[in-house]
Length: 331
Image 1 (cartoon, rainbow, N blue to C red):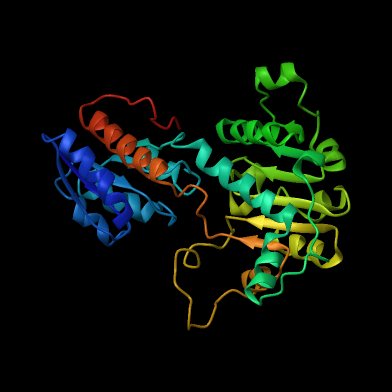
Image 2 (tube, helix red, strand yellow):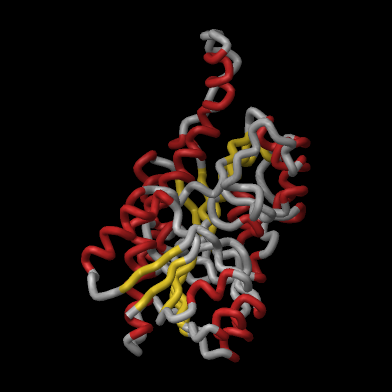
């Protein structure tokens, strides 16, 4: 059996070597290059391909992969919204993702960032860097005094809720598909409008499916409390970033944290030091003392990376053996 992997990063190699040692009967080859119509030929002769990328899995890409005889595709990430499923059906692709690799990684990051926003650590850090050790006027707020609205109560959202409970915050939640335990606790509101009206801070944990596109837009922001804090470590397309910037400018949004961005491909995970920065909106946000920007790193922990590698390669083996892994994508 042979598996070919695309986009293998240096930080993934220890987990990959560990998996290879436990599966010596499987031949594994890989490249740091992403899967494209041009690189698809590298997988020729393989039984399955393992991938991780933000580039779209276009018809052209899937056609090129199918043309070299590979129709088993295991993603090392959770998102599947960039797959041309019509083409995947046409070529009978088997596809898997890793829907649960470490909910704690994303939940912890989002709550750390929310806490930093409330305690104004960016402004404090800037003062301390200049040896200004005065307190005022950089005063913070306590998490336990906030009503925090959680949009999306899947694996990650529920971990975030537990963290918020530890802080003593009042939690309200919204989900089209309520969790029975949270429902029994009475945490849910019936509509997003109710959540917007009540929440001092809002954190998002919903997928970037078309129906959620620009969920946070000018209309939604207008329904929020004055001085609301917003944290998004879910998907970039959930935010109308122009509306968010307008909200920051007006003071309607007091603080904003983002780990994802709608136009992040080719921008995040690149070194722009000593180069012209290509995105004026992100440059503007980074410069603000009430905005925290991280470049899609919420997932990035040793535990999460190990699970993403091991689960995806296990699924690739299952597909090659004619089996359906538990993490197969139903489409």
